[in-house]
View 1: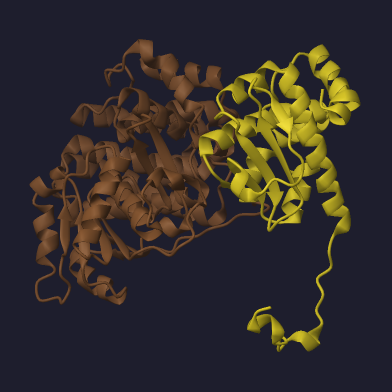
View 2: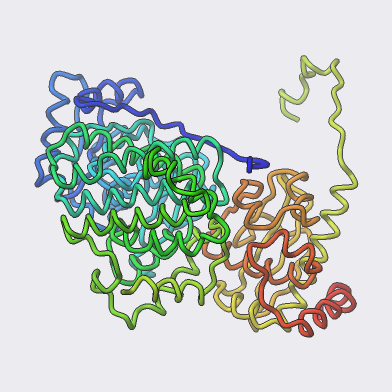
Length: 394
Length: 186
């Protein structure tokens, strides 16, 4: 059914290719920025990726004015304030984020604090609270999964209140995202697998959400096809540069899809599980994806069935009766998970992820506070969430 | 008066006057009032709404409005955890959260049950300024009050799943809200 109304916005310039990183100084110059701060984490630094980024500035006329490489796995307002202080002290004029979701979200938070001249980041939590144009901001993802390089959302925790706050504004979009396979070559198999399943979940959930639209569908469709074609190969052979580049593109496309169509029950439960039990986001997506799709099956069966084409290919699609396609999609996803478990032990259940069974009610309660439920085709209340979490336990 | 306002617009001779929809504005004003008073009344009698409101910040002030300014309607959490209708004069800066319809057409569609809350939110027909967790809770309360205010045949078309309220309670409280709740807020 064609939506009666929809909006689609994707203002991030995508620079993708085997030497795309070398265009970073040019892109900054185009934005009138010549003294960026580099924001990253220890993992990225230890993998030697920061040095690769630094190298591209040789004889460029653009100078890195500051480096912050201590972003923790969960971005927090304290770290954001610390980085913002460094930005001001060193006279920086732009931000370059090199990392995964936490680094990118922290960088978005830094941009809020600097632009708004804020002392309390949390004052700007929520939707549409930002009005001023932000500092030039470029993202270089080092995982292929979060899609944060093309979204207008940041999730940052408030350590004083022990909660995660979300910030949503069109001002938060980066100006450019640079997809260079060199940035993901060193990812170990289990992280490649988890982030790949995260990207797959973005694409699938965007395709069946209440906010789906023809534009986001196109991005979802291609993202699913590319992930299916490349994920297993890349998990088995991390040095596959073509595959790495393809996955980076698929992740960004899935990011554009879900940024414009949002996600649903799988993310709803995944966010809650991450918050309560600190299960990595990609792992949580891998656990909940088939369970969530089964939950949505009565209302979204036709849409799920359509995904058999990009997920299974034309032969499988043609040989599967229309009424069985949705179930086939779910079984193919389960097969992918089994294969990933064989290769790198990516958990398929909460039990395999060492989640304490006693925490399940807490996860269900936390799910009620997550906005992803709003876009799911089916309503989700506490009892529904708990039943799904129980189902995903073992 | 500023210099800018003294200077006649170069397009003044066009005399293009937008037509206003007084009817739709009136309908939205009426439904806002019914919704505000209905929530005030239901918060005294419905356990689901009470449970949701208990999670809101103290003295939370919720403002519904049609952009850019009117119609508008506000309700607040009281000290005893109930809701009270606060009329049409609450300023944006006083509100804990602002739920704004982008234009009168969006508000009219939602207030006349042509589109449900989840779908309106998904279709960007309303913008939320404030804490999204609070917004989710408000939307759950709206689902409950809409279940009381609208007959089943309408409610089932605008909700993903209708709140499970027993027949006698639903119709009894519906009668109460329409006869006494809206008029007196009890």
